[in-house]
Image 1 (tube, rainbow, N blue to C red):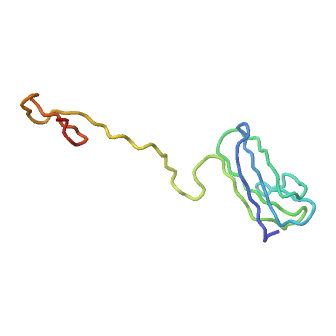
Image 2 (image 1 turned 90 degrees about the horizontal axis):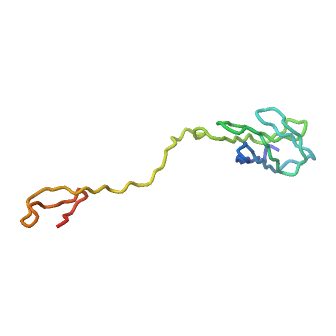
Image 3 (image 1 turned 180 degrees about the vertical axis):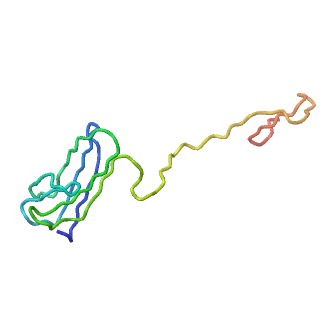
Length: 127
């Protein structure tokens, strides 16, 4: 089964950590599902399994392997993360909408009709 791969997708169902596993390339009738190198269940080889972990909160990381039952013939490891910083050291950056330019009107120079000339700090003259 090494030549084939396993895939995992994590999501929350009613707030609980849930992982959908899928695989291909295994030929036996049964498959062992390993989480953190421990067999959590043996299932029929239908190419998919949903692991309802049950944790409601917090950051967590789960590593899975799919193996042919009772053997060491396993797929690649797949990791699913819930919360926390990115996996590969990328700096998380909070995106915010662009700020509008704030325009204040200030009196700068003398105007014969208005006794002052009004100029915008955003650039341009009011008069």
